Length: 253
Image (cartoon, rainbow, N blue to C red; front, side):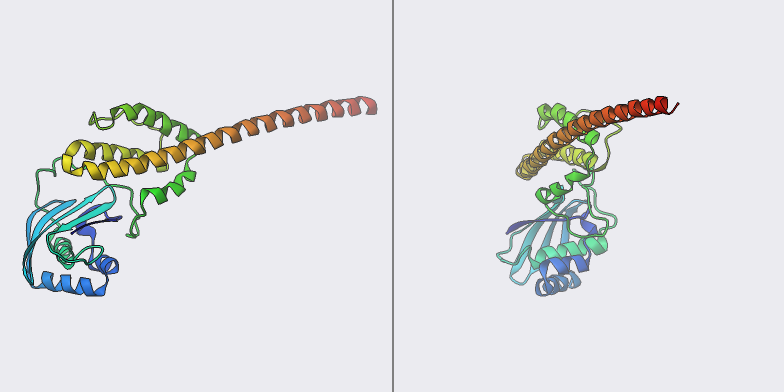
């Protein structure tokens, strides 16, 4: 059984009991907590964003693979359970990681750790990228121009080069966060064949975000042109008023 859900945590050991219970519900959480309390979890390999484990279940030993990549929590268990969004065995593994994973075991991938995705400091679950696109309105005109210029340079290197074009120092806010997302997705694309399907899905979401930003930039350009026209009209009116005041002054004298 394999499942994916959005997640705001930056590392797996940040998923505490309350967060897990709110996601899977009381019954599944209690079953998983019992497995954890009975020490039926065996960690085979783990780092901050990935765990491979085994849980001694009621009808045998089941294998789990849990990953946290680009704001998505992926869980896979060999058990036949239909529990959603993931099973009691994965709950037991995540509880074990939370209580015992402060010093995670290094793995082959630990040397190449991706930057953390944008997250909610309040610990709430992150929304999918398609929903986050509504926040693009926080971009100002020049940030949008710099971001789209960077994306146009980076497109030809995606999936080919580990290093994308340098990011302008003046680029900040949500645009810089999305640069980090694209860089992280590119790293995942190059990392391994196994993760490419997940990276492709997220890259498609990022492309949708880029399309939204491009449309917003077009709107901002139109607004800038209208503002320039209004300024020209105001300048003419000011000049007319100045001329009128000069005539009045001459008449008074």
